[in-house]
Image (cartoon, rainbow, N blue to C red; front, side, top):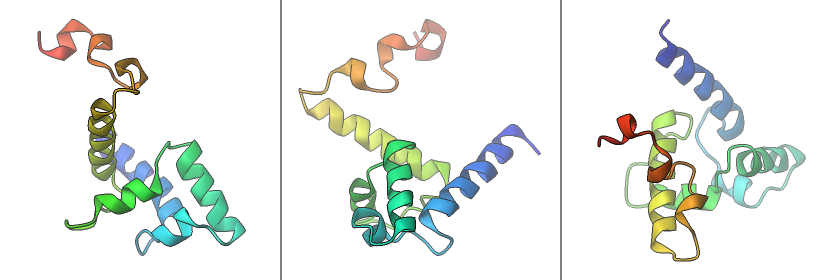
Length: 109
């Protein structure tokens, strides 16, 4: 098994535990009613730094993303970064990967 396959399999297992095998129940993440829902919502917000309301808005007008897969999270973080760039109160240093932090050989210059 390649590293990429292993990573995707482990990521899928972690996300399936949080989002469920049948798909994401945004209602239970945005407004949790049970202890299990509250624990999942807290883990998603605090450990993975994800906003379920933003996730839910991501699927409107398009085919819903499968949040158990890493590609959906790449799109999520791309959009979060883009939105942060549009708001002046967020500094470039606040982003996880600012261009000035990348080594020259990775930035393409």
